[in-house]
Length: 155
Image (tube, rainbow, N blue to C red; front, side, top):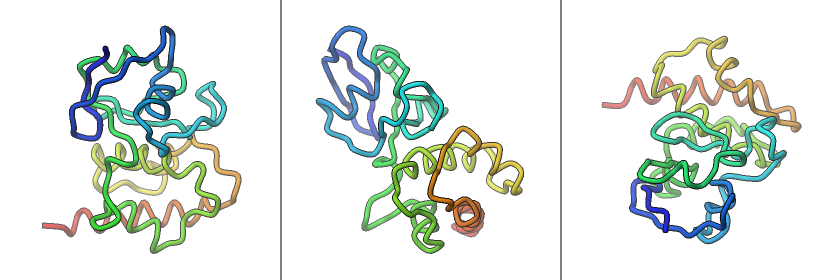
């Protein structure tokens, strides 16, 4: 049995041998935020935070999460109390199909934790690993800038 912290709560799972963290999260733990896109760390749809740092859940062995903290997009906020990034993405209408957004939100959250006032170049660099085919890039950049501003203004 694999024990770790998932979105701030204790979690356990029994992944099959060789299973990825993404397989565990989407399988027996029932999360739908991290997505399987390419399976090769090329699209970012599977991105999670592992002890606060971005990680590709599609290639990360599930065992790597043992005793560690994993945060998915479900752990950022709730519909009643969205994370500032989630609120900003809604306000900017920064997604179309939404397939890539959970990974983008995770990477943006890691960026804002490390750099509360990023310039556009820093945002672009943080989001570089993500593939979005909808063409929402400008709205995504505005949403991250908006969220950064909201977070700096919060008490």
